[in-house]
Image (cartoon, rainbow over all chains, first blue to last red; front, side, top):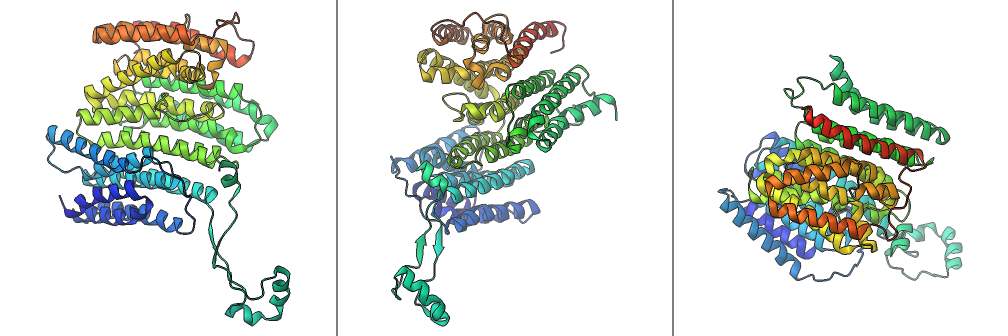
Length: 220
Length: 373
């Protein structure tokens, strides 16, 4: 049992409590926990996939605005995950298993996040937490089939979740404000457009949201 | 390569070929082509059941007669789905029943249940991709992915725990219940997508549950029986309300899970037949409601008799609870005006389903007595 294996369930609890923000940290710690045991090809592949499935979605989400869904019963949810982890530890101790089931604790935390949270992004983070946990447990148990199926499930969840985010969440678009350095060079071309819009050099905010897509309108 | 091996390989590849052909032809011709492809697929599945490939067990592929018969039921469900459907302009939607049935069949026969779970995840991903393509369906698609993936992760987590431990059995049973879509625990399926994706998906989950029993142990069996009983009793309590009708749609899968838990695989096969041919959104029709309510003649009725005979050896308390639950559910879920008099439906699809249900109800006990199962 390593420090990384203990930290992984704690970070999974942070994902349950706070959401997607802790997922990259969980991914890094899980990858370290996988690599500490050895550097065989299975472990290297598992660690790489964990990093991709943890950091990729968080990076992708940085291009989108928060959906701002109100959560109910938030404070109790991490304690539910903690209670389930304790039950799992007691059950594994009773069945005679000496190893700390770090991966399965992470899976339980992810399952709690998926079932108890209502925001789509939070549920996505919960599913990716499950992927991290199963990958960790599969690599520790050296079950190649489990690692392969988890990799497939991770691809499916990352892609379908990304598609859903792209359709239901407004994207952050960078718009260059008129009247700045880049616009001064173009001079005359922009004069006509400025007079049309009525913005005579006044700075606009850099980040303006696009209008939400059809899904966001219909499903709001 | 011997003929049975070739037949087995062709039976697995045929629905995928059918999907490719149905997606490539023009819309007006697609339904006829789909019916032909699904019909040939049914015959191939039947041929594989009658002439199994010898030596398949030695190479790791599952060759259980119940599993082979289950794949025949999945193929019959595909034929019925195709017969019921109209011309569809969307190519992906047109090919979806074929793809999902092919992947469900492959998931059941895979040498390791873990691989079967992976194939089910792929099937779910394809189905959700097809269903969530129209505008406004993104969140509905996400709900399907979420619930199905939770079920798959629960089973995977159970498979990673020690063999026969209570926690492993419990987690795997919870996962199977979610994959089988048992109301109120399972997927938020709706009428338009359940026959295309859900029927083969849940059927494959039921067939996989029989293979997971070795790993799950006693806790797995008990948890499956408890979940099935809970669903049956909830159906009985909900009565004829909307919730009751929603629960009644998965009534055969609840009974099938009880049968799997009670180690009555042939009874589970008969309930699977009822599920594939009368379950889901078909439960609103009088002939389907009659079959689902385990009225004779039909596969679910015979399955009930087999299940109760097996359960009485297993546990008297569970037998009494099951009998009482089934009777209450049937009495309370039957439509207010009865089933009506149209025992023999007017449409071709309904007639085919009724014939298969009655034939299966007669032939499966006969085959059981002859030692086929």
